[in-house]
Amino acid sequence: MAVLDILEFPDPRLRTVATPVSEVTDRHRELIADMFETMYAAPGIGLAATQVNVHERILVMDLSEEQNQPLVFINPEVTILDEELGEYDEGCLSVPGYYETVNRPRRIAVTALDREGKIFSDELDGLLAICLQHEIDHLDGKLFVDYLSPLKRNRIRKKLEKDQRRRA
Image: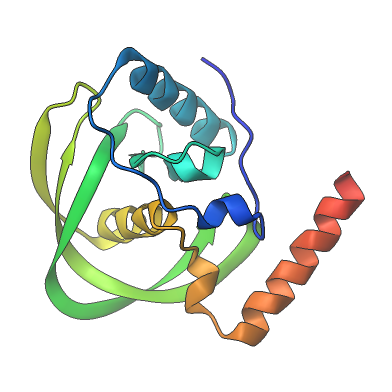
């Protein structure tokens, strides 16, 4: 396993729309293991393949404190079960150090493939539903800062660009 580099906003590769996985292979399972290692090292609770510059519809999550409840979603498809929106403070490994309030549906259903390529469905609510929607946004080339006003988004972009230049 390896810790992968996480792309940071405003890297244009984060805007790439991921392609569906036609067949889950050992290469995908190795990528998933690397994504978990990367997410735990960051530390974070979710990571989409797009964030590590792999543009396939794969995401991983683990909301447990002990980091022992790994979840894998390949080609996730979501149905909104409740139109009521919840306000959540979201952060992102690709937008380090920033947290902003985003409104998303509180209850969803998801159908996806697991790491073995088996289809499953589940109903999610609360933080799990929010996190999944956040990660699916990445697969669609969208970031949580896109939900913010242009002024806030540009302020965050400029600060991150300055930090990136300083590190380079």
